[in-house]
Amino acid sequence: MSDTIQYGHLMHRAMRGLMKELLQEIAVKGELPGDHHFFITFDTTHPGVDIGPRLTGMYPEEMTVVMQHWFDNLVVMDDRFTVTLNFGDQPEPLVIPFDAIRTFVDPSVELGLRFDAQDDDDLEDIPESPMV
Image (cartoon, rainbow, N blue to C red):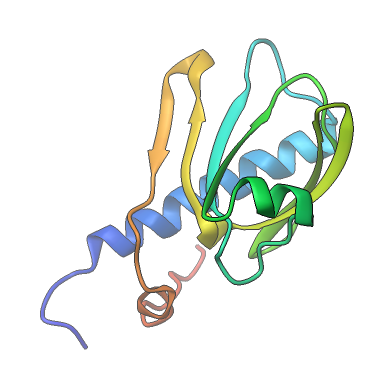
């Protein structure tokens, strides 16, 4: 056990939970409400990221995608989400683990979440809080 409370790790887990819940609601509705739109920046080298070879060549380390007017096949799982986005009139399926995300921004409400680079194993050392 550590001598300090791991606030940073706890905050990252809470913010990822917020993203997951938000994306689950969007997946059910099939669209973003009002003027909401998301800029999601993620590490393309992170284990579990799956993007096509064309996109890998264009974005070998980091990529920012925009979810706004058109997206398809949004499926949210415990540790990742999948979505099809349009790149130059070509639909491309993406698999993005939540741990790969570096920033999540909704400019319509000035919401911005930033995730520091960290070792995912450190998060596993923190037990989940029991739900009440």
